Length: 87
Image (cartoon, rainbow, N blue to C red; front, top):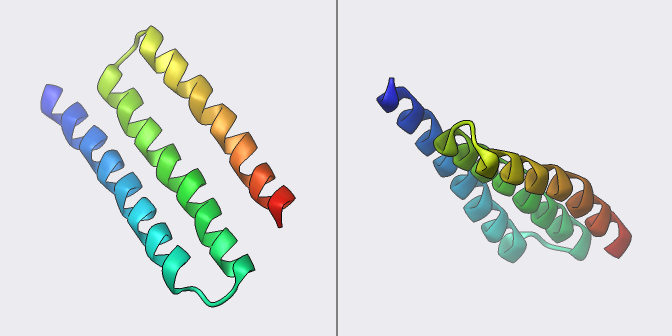
């Protein structure tokens, strides 16, 4: 049972890392400001969300999971709003 949790958490962490790397490449390669901001928004929202989900799976049912969930919800609301406000 423990290995299933580890595999799921590592898959989510790797998925978040891949989103972050792809967003970073997009920030460099995309042609104009608005498409670069889109890449930054995807990186912040999906990359950080997947990383938070992986950390929550790894932490199990504890106070740490609640704190990670609150941070993830806060980031899911504030990051797209901040990107839109900057645009």
